Length: 289
Ligand code: GLU
Image 1 (tube, helix red, strand yellow):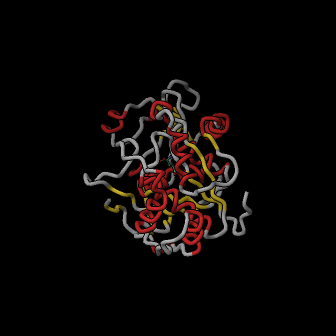
Image 2: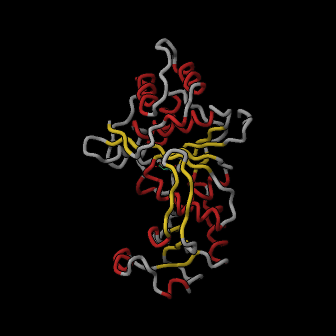
Image 3: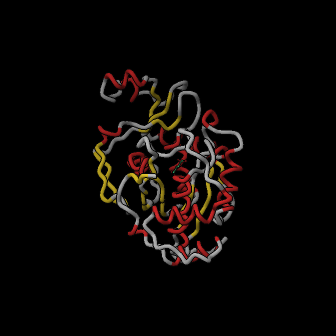
């Protein structure tokens, strides 16, 4: 593992719901370069906590694509499917502190009440067979995003997030916060589609007394239909055979200077690391394909 001079620890955390597409490669490259530019570590976490949404073989495709693009991570891969004990421990703490509660409200019920939970929810700290939600007690959550600027979310706007689903699966909001703390992540670089979720995650970090993290939310690439490229919408997988061209395309999207033409992939990434300028990333939420 490379030694981090600056204490920066970044990560790439794909869900194996499909192979990498251009949008997820953009996130991988930006998080890699931002970490390496400060001689930081770059960790890989596979977010495999939602089996119904996973695609067979996707993990191998993702790993092969990262390797083909020269994106070598530090240390061992962290697999969320092996982290249940840590998630349960966090849930126990929250339930014991009465900062989380069991809730059996349906989406339709919550839509009718404008997201307000009935009093019985807030008194249920021991009941099984229901979702577990985090109680958002703060009035508002504020943070500064390195690309998207100052953000402020009112708690009435965001509602109480599910931490464990009724079907027994752990929710992303819980797993991501517990694992970012486990991996001692200092900096998160990811797509702007997760900007709203950051408010929940910050609240959960504070409730669990975890260290604050810096955030950089990248514009997402949208297709002709105006929708974000995503694995769920079957965005085409990146072609590992054209790794160099893919990297150049991603650097262009990220507003970065382009390296001389004759470099191989290792040299190209080294050059891009040396010339990385996070403040050149377009401060938009969407980039057209
Ligand atoms: N697993 C999420 C995804 O593939 C990313 C989570 C994160 O970066 O916080 O979209």
